[in-house]
Length: 135
Image 1 (spheres, helix red, strand yellow):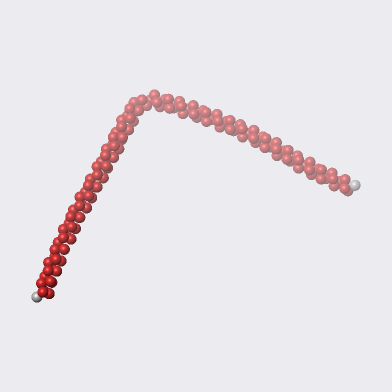
Image 2 (cartoon, rainbow, N blue to C red):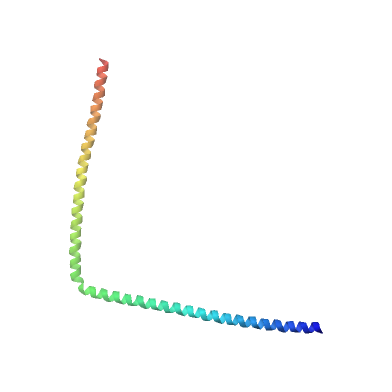
């Protein structure tokens, strides 16, 4: 009888422990769900704010582009003139570089001619020495 009483007591205690664990688990799940919902809500608000900001910037950009179109003929003329001047400067620089390359090529030819002459002189000097030895 005492053994049966202990078994029933342990059974009730086990049931009570299970109920407590189940209750704590349910509370933990509710808490986690509320935290996740809050995080998702904050993230959505952040995304919405970023999208609003991007939308505003896009609208400003479009408005700016429209206002630039009205000023476009004047600006395009100015831009065209600036581009033309830039092209002329670049062409002048190319001509200067080409002139410098031509001068460098002429100097290189002179150096080659001098080295060819030096080789001829050495060859002649060697032949003259051979003739002296033969004598």
